[in-house]
Length: 308
Image (cartoon, rainbow, N blue to C red; front, side):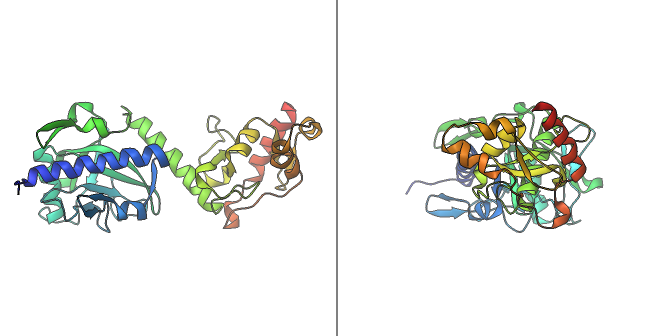
């Protein structure tokens, strides 16, 4: 039997994890449910989860260094950014020598890439990889994490073949501002869809991959805040029609389709997709306090009437 070193196993598992994440994100989008991450992927006959109840996670198949770190939206640790616009990841507990903290320290010394899962709503995460531990601040009980700098990208050697981590990384966004915007967009979408029980407020379609969180007032405007009360869960058809002012949602929550659209004859999609929802009441969120803001709907309705 050929001897396989712990380092070789470590590198092959990481590349397999990055490959699995790349394919998952390409097919299903970058918001991943926790149960999918906890199930993980198959590696040489073993199941390798990517997360556990602990924020710093090393699956059994890895010899020493963690595979992932997690920040949850409701977690006990105050993970944040530092003055260099890098991410700070808090220790597990307050003991610098806890085995999980020692694991991240080893990742820093050995320059080993991790996956960083950032929670957008409870139970759903956006993954960033490769993530590197680049510094440690014992006085703050924290490590410094970089997910932006391409110069940190490693070359992993497995079975004599060199592979770069960037081969399995998603397109890089070289700005923490862009990453924050991306996270805020995902948080807004997930919270809106959650409030509407993952269905279109107009037609009740329940396929999340075909649903969007539509802004009542565009986020490019001062009133366009990323709150659930400024959002409506719409399928892609109704989102496009709403943005194009083909219909509006009045402050009494009734749908009003534009008059010229009501007079058109253009096949079953127009009939069932738009004309039949005229004067129907939208599905409202749970709890009711998350319902669309009536003042924002009034402002949007005025824009609709001006456009028509």
